[in-house]
Image 1 (tube, helix red, strand yellow):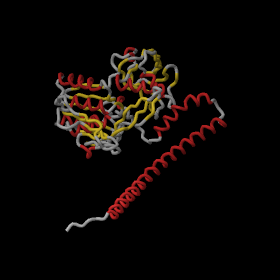
Image 2: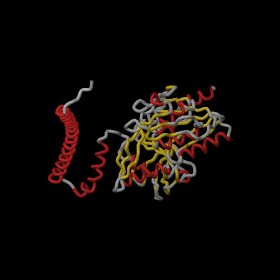
Image 3: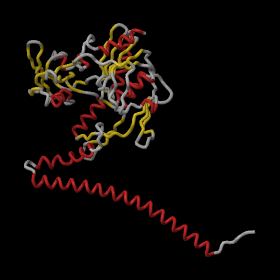
Length: 400
């Protein structure tokens, strides 16, 4: 027997349903509203504080406010990025951005030397001179003490800014006053030499490759050096990534692609803030068939860590040295309207072996832990006799 519901009861149910829906909507709306107001309040408080500081400076600061006003925009932008408390996210002025972009896309350019400041002796040294460079043509050598750059004495307080003059992409003249043994001399050089990102040498059946950074040209340079080694009968290769921290994940993956055979899956995948695939890097090239050992230390960071991790997990390379830095994130460049830019961390790098191989914050642990015994940790200045990490790698490769 069918029961009929009266019109009055039906209307009552509709009214109750509408009231319940309205109440729930108001609860959620209130939560959203409160969240918006809270954010607005926080932003308003930040802006009020900034305005208060600006007012105090304008009224009481004893100094030139013209420079303050001209630097205010970049200082605010830099402060925003610094507030992230992420050392890999940085603000760049227009000139800094231009320098960074040229370095990533074209590699380093300069007079053709590598330099190092030794805090124990308070001396600056030339650690390496590139063949065919202006520095090589002027006769500079590894071990020379740098006294002055462009007439300014090199000190602990200014060595970084003076060293930067050695890597100018502009065709400018750079002078280096240096001391060797018992004489002092000044060399005048024109900057603009394209500095390779790879240093290599061969001995017997062993090859050695040092990668200083992963730039747009690194994969091609690496392929050329490995091909040359193959032609010369090399069987085993040491890849030195100690103190390598420059470049991008993209160009590290391209360099891996030169060495790693065509495999299923990926070399690495980058996960965004929502744990979705942001970028996937795959292997397409071939394998040179070498046995590999890879040298790492605490200065091995970022793209170099991905390279070391995948060399071990895909190519069976032995990692030798000490734990890496633990910088397993990817950064992207965002241009600003005034020509400046922000390099922002936008993803987590997941290497071939998945989440279990993620090295962010923990670093990549070597297979053979070897601490460098030499007092001087500037890799390029070490002789083979002083470099016990390199000796361990050669012993491992020659024992097979």
